[in-house]
Length: 217
Image 1 (cartoon, helix red, strand yellow):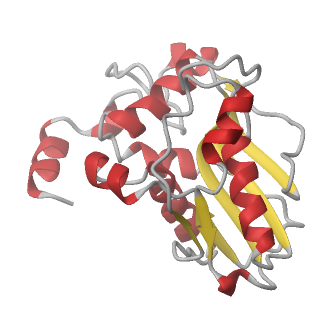
Image 2 (tube, rainbow, N blue to C red):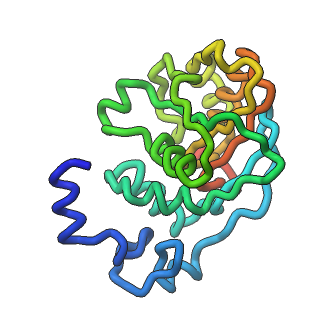
């Protein structure tokens, strides 16, 4: 951690403010104040994404969960990644060889400074003992932002954007991302992994957007 981040954490400890609204308050075990705890909506089930063999999430995307994801993604609130990862529960029947975060293009990583999905995956792997492998899937095309595109536009935008390693062959992998909106990103990643010989691809995200209308996640 950079020195400036250590100083800021000492002055403004992240564990005493709500992960969503940012208020100092009594927090529950997931880091939310009472008001946000009431407002959050937990994930129950959703259709499996094409090309995957299973899917799970933590929250339904709404104002409360959306603020957490956006803080992590755009406001350098990297401390939120562990709290979100700690809530991802994987089915016992998923026999996973390695976790693969949905990759960002190196240009976007340079601009943002980190890949939020990789941060979530790192913390999940530390907790579960699953191996983290960031070399099995690369993003080779710096695509347009997905949020403003239609479902068809997202599919076209992602076509050929990922490249899987031959080392995927025979493996059962877990894709990790922050938000499932249309499912287009996970579908394209899973398709590329299976084309490289992966036998099973499961997916886990922090949030699921219930009704995708081309919103701005």
